[in-house]
Image (tube, rainbow, N blue to C red; front, side):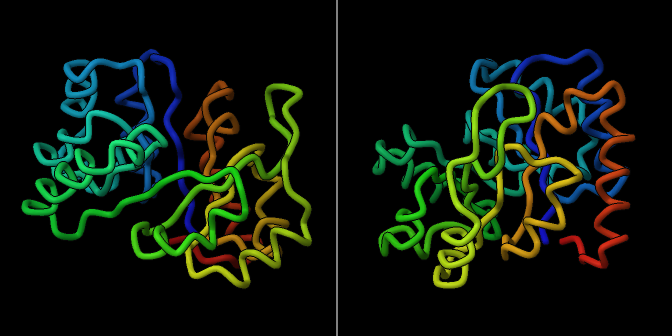
Length: 211
């Protein structure tokens, strides 16, 4: 299964060091999701992360930075998808430098997994909310049966997002998800890196290989 961490949406103290620490602990896929951050501020954050880790970062905004920093991939929001011609052109420009660029997106409806126009486009998608929120009263939006059935039938790799913490690993694996995206479970803790290590240890306890 893929073990993915999504960045804090806000600004954290020593954030570049924390992100670097996650990479050093073995994280392979990090989604940099900071829509309110300017291009310059995003560039500064990337510059503060060692260059050899840039190929593990998927960026959610300021996609052109993927060319300058040779990032792992870009994530398309609903806004990017609506601007299909501009987005298509941006992707092609980035791929000239980085042919291995991955493209990801987010769904909140199981039916979207079967839309033919999207099947070839994404390396994986986030589906949310899967479980009840860890920090609010927001509840998961799908039944276990419907999730299992959809994942078995779709050709898209599906990553569980929403209410994901160490206790969700075993159940998510049994449902059939291709990976998990951790957010609050990492950034709401006093020591994000220690929490990440607990997550890795749980994967190992369950004998679930991490991609």
